[in-house]
Length: 339
Image (cartoon, rainbow, N blue to C red):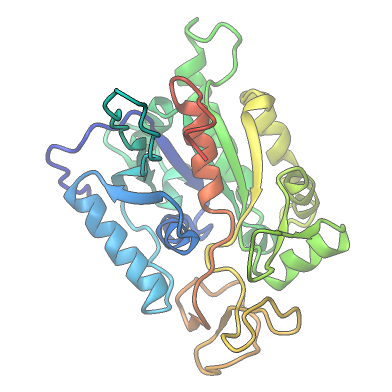
């Protein structure tokens, strides 16, 4: 069911969210709002129309107040948001009126498609065709790679390759793009960094580093090391095909337009009495029956089915991919405005 969008505000940039079922597309969108609030910075998320605002409120409430994952996407949802940055005050010059600066605004036109859309039948009016329309009109893509799902199901390449083949046929069959490459900027996000197996893999590769600006001392994987972790996690796949994901992406997209991020929509558990990351007590997703520390997630259990978020969500690296894409897509590429 498509939301009735009415007459939305104009959006200058189109960003699509791409991922297999269960990769966390809906949760990623909800975590974006929470992350910006916790940062206490100048950026905020604003809905461009009624359905987008309603979606933002519903998903943010589920993740923060209810401590539950938002429901998986069951129908194609088209949402329009703005990432808006309050203008910095300008100094007043003698004898001149102070110039009023406008808010910096990145338009985000997000199509939150159910995972099955990437593997469904072709034909006008189908979810797959709507998805291809959105990808073709977008110039920014957030590609979510779920290493836990890949270890169990191994279907990331299957969902990726079919859609890329169709997208290339549609966009590259003509001479519009003379270099034969898709024109998008691509933010590849390794999700579920809060999961024990993902964190331990990063630790074994010596990729963990603290963020000196983070008062909670949560571990992170720097942008310069994110691709290495992606490659390492791609070697552990139920199908053995995950090692073809990265070569496929670089075959269709400009390699210098691809950037890697290691993300978590819920982050690590933070004991309010301690206030900083505890390497012996960090799991933020637990079975509902326990109601306390401990427990490992069953990868076959969908998020929200028998599991709850233990404490406050502390999203990791969900803002950075969106701001990076906004920066790349802005007409003047002004890095000073988008940060």
